[in-house]
Length: 219
Length: 364
Image (tube, rainbow over the protein chains, first blue to last red):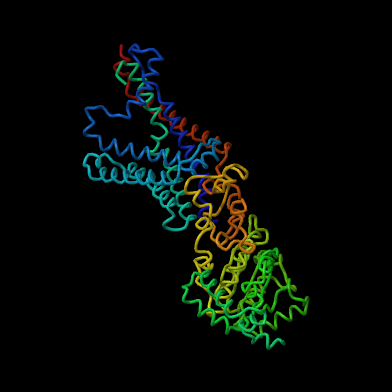
């Protein structure tokens, strides 16, 4: 069995099953958390609380103006790399093909040149963010193995993807196999580390926004 | 012309007899140096060496095969010098072509090996079955494994022609009932050239033969022992539909508007990006076309294990996902594990609270 056949077959199946089991493991744990006692009367109706949750999903994209000067760099770089990832994942024709194969959903892809530019911006912003994490004393102190491993497991698919698009180093088959394997590594790690925020971020914001609205706090 | 004269006749003399002049030979040498990715300055040397060259003995053994490789090499569309190269070799043994049969054929093989010991090229088409002592393919009562071991020993070099001989090919496809393997799995200590393809491109074999006849050695090979000049790039690299791949324009079905405009067949399962061969540049049937030009994606037939590589119409970007049933089982396992962990945590917390006594909130 070639490396590519392994990546497209047994490795893909194992990675998807581990990721699905891990995500449901995390979700079950979250949903079965004991509910906290609410002793105060709610400040808003259920509709108001749902609206508060929805508002927080949006409002947390932009930091409060008080903090803007300190976090501007992080916000711009993080937004760049998250947007870049979204463009790569949702605009790359091969990615759409894979999504179509698994879910049946499809949409038009973007030209390869745009995907390559997005990949380049994503890689550059990730590298700057890593340098900042390493050189900033507080960020360095707060960082754990999870942070660095999660960074690496996102960086590798983008790196192998841009090499694959350019077909500059190695053959297409080898690069494709390495790209798929790197994505599979990320899928395996996703439920068990900070990458899980990809699945929880909006639900988490929504839950927090509902809680804030219940207490009458600004969302 | 008797046999001795035939063996000592030079290629130049043979071509003259067939109506080709020296100019034609030089033109052929220029085309061949280009095809073999050699510098243009080599062309006159090649032409001179070819003109002086005498016949080379080739022993061709067909093992577990369909005869497609031999057919494609013989079915030349026009009598070019390229095809006459095949006439110029002394094909001393080939079961499908020779008049002799039975014991006479076996005797011919023994005589050819003895007469050209250490000098003949051994061409193999077909895979070699090794399961159960190799009983699944016998010639004259002898297994392919036995014949290969004996005849390869005295060969100058071994040419594995076609994907079956190179890597095991279709006979090796799952579940490989005969234990089929390629030549390289069995022969060691001899130069081996793999010319894969199902069937292989005829011009590649003639290129290898011309190189061997001209320079007395085999052409440069890649890590899979394929002639680098022909297998150094992928079909995708040389495909005329490549610009559409770069623009993200893909045919969605074999008869849609995109397909009619010649858009890339990647989404229809084309294996061009991972297939090394010269189909897109040399093409087939006298340069008429090749599969992608005829509207079908590349099957990747010159790559190892192409038959088991996940389906001809599955895009390379796709794969073999686990299916909804297995995904459901994985989700159920995840929910069960998460619920068990959460309930255990709740139990531990309740136990800790019980040990600690009532909280201030609960105290009246």
